[in-house]
Image (cartoon, rainbow, N blue to C red; front, top):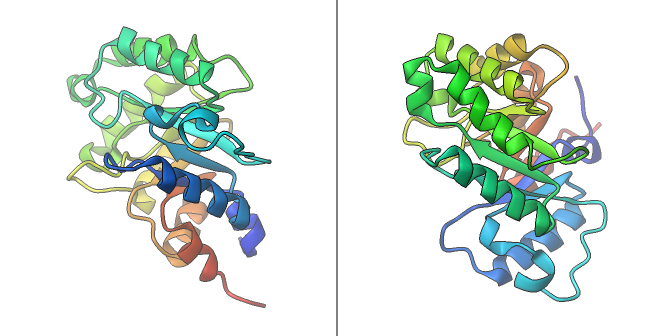
Length: 227
C-alpha cells in the first residue's frame, strides 16, 4: 500500500512520554502535531488537561489527545489503572493506552488480564478509545496471542506492541503480523517503540498496523517517497 505524507500522518500518534518533559515541550509537540496533520498526540497524564498545564489558549483542532495508564511497568492494581483512566477522561483525553501486567501474561492468567482491561474500559465510554500495550518484545508468540485475546475479552479497541521503555525492545513486523492475525480485522493494532524512519513505519503498516506511535514523526513523514 502506497501512502502520501498526509495519509501516513493520519496513522501517527505523535508522542512525548519522557519522564523529564516540561510543558513547553508539550506545547511544541502540539504545534508540530497540528503542522504535520497527525491523528493524535500522546502525553503523560501529568500534562493533562492541556489547556491548564500547557497553554491556556491551546487549540487542538482535529488532533486527538491520548495518554497512558499503568505506564510504563504495568505493575499497577486494577483499581489504580481504572482511576488513572477515569481521571484522564475527566481531564480531556480522547484515548488511553494502558499497560498490561506482564507477570500475569507470563503466568497465563487470561481472566485476570481481561479483568484489568475491563476495569479500564468501564471508565472510557465510546467514542473514546482504549489501547492495550502488551510489550510484545518481552513475550513469546504464545504469550502475545494470550495478551491480545485478553485485550479482546476486556473490550479494548486496539492492541499495542510496546511502551518504548522496556529493555527487550519495541515493535517488530513479526509481532504486528501476529497481533493482527490474533485480533482479526475489527480491532486496531498500534506499532510503537523504535519507529524512527519511513521505511520502518511503512513496514509496520504493511504488516497490519493501523496506528504508529513515534516521536520521530517529522523525520518519518519527510521520508515519504515523492511521485
